[in-house]
Image 1 (cartoon, rainbow, N blue to C red):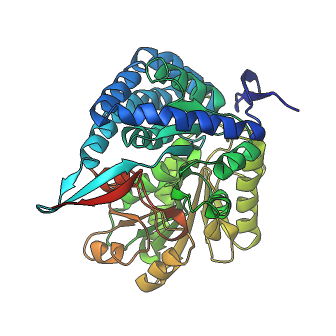
Image 2 (cartoon, rainbow, N blue to C red; image 1 turned 180 degrees about the vertical axis):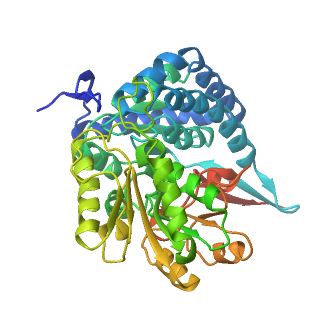
Amino acid sequence: MNTHLSSYDPSTGRELGKVPIAQPADLPAIVKNAKEAAKQWQSLGMSERLNLVRDAFTRIEPHTHELGILLSQEMGKDARRSMSEVGGSAYSASYIAEQAFSALQSQKLNRTTELQYQPLGVAAVISPWNYPMAMACNLIVPALIAGNTVVFKPSEETPLIAQAFVDLLNEVLPKDVLQIVHGNGDVGKALVESDVNLIAFTGSMAAGQDIMTRAAGGLKRLIMELGGNDPMIVMRNANIEAAARFAVASSLENTGQMCTSTERIYVDASIAERFEARVVQIASEFRAGAWNETNVQIGPIINEKQHRNIMHHVQDAIDKGAQLLLGSVDQQPPFINPVVLSGMSSEMKIEREETFGPVIAISHFDNLNEAINRANDSVYGLGAVVFGEQGATEVANRLDAGMVAVNQGVGGAGDSPWVGAKHSGYGFHGSPAGHQQFAQVRVLSKR
């Protein structure tokens, strides 16, 4: 029986460190401790919980540099992006906490009726490796402010950064309010099947379906973001330079290992040649390498399995008629320099499945309705983007996605939620309405 989980630098394969593994049999006791801690945590009241959560996250700021380096080593993204994620997580956590505090206040509906937001109990938070701090904080913070305690299972790909920031938070938070458990899928499954009240998850659609099945017996609350296969439509009246720059940046950001990366591009045939030429020119300036190398814009693929999947999608597309405009199909782990494909079709895996890598896949269309239909012909519906002038908003309104943008990336502004449609989401987080999903709504009526 393995007692420790090793973490490796995906660029070199070098072991970075180890964390103890929680055995599935350990989960009932861990959750029981969380339930006991919840009594005290809830009794503090929301104002005191807010103060403690804000104070806890101030512990991160003095350690931004060391945490950023650890994140780069463990996940592979460059130091600038890692430092931004660490610093941004500390800053946004305070903002999310205050926003949740406001959203979860009781509301007077009339003279006799009050709407309340009560704690659910214990929240299981299961987060991904591609943004190991940011995504975890987005789920942990509203859960804590609502009065829940948290059992947090990070990805087995990035356990060290998760352990490091949880240790810092626990310098302030009361005992067992935030517990961390490490391990593979068996630990995650045991956590889902344990006596938790809420499961907040970000990850693959297949894992989300498994969670739903395992959670069904206990009718547990679910908040899940389940990945995407985001389309981009480039209309004939689009600004070609802006569209090409966005296509490359969105497809290659975080090595394409991002749920809202652009994965399918549909461009009007009348401008396709110019668009593709500019995409190839821009993408050719990107180079893959380790996080600490100079002049590198693309980091390593997280593991060999994912590398094989990306290369398989590329080879499948070429075998079915796609033209390779940039890159090669024989790139070896752990890196993939940018790949640009033209002639994507619905028979190809690269159009049907989430590739999650630095690949730019393009298809031409003659009829705008055809492009809209193909963009919508997917089980995914996280994000979608339209580039164009007159008529672009009308096209955007016809796309089946939780987040749609015109001439920019998705994600909204201000207090907009992070939300997926179709198989990309079940519930949502972010925004006042999203924070309220971490609580039990209760109606109190009195004379």
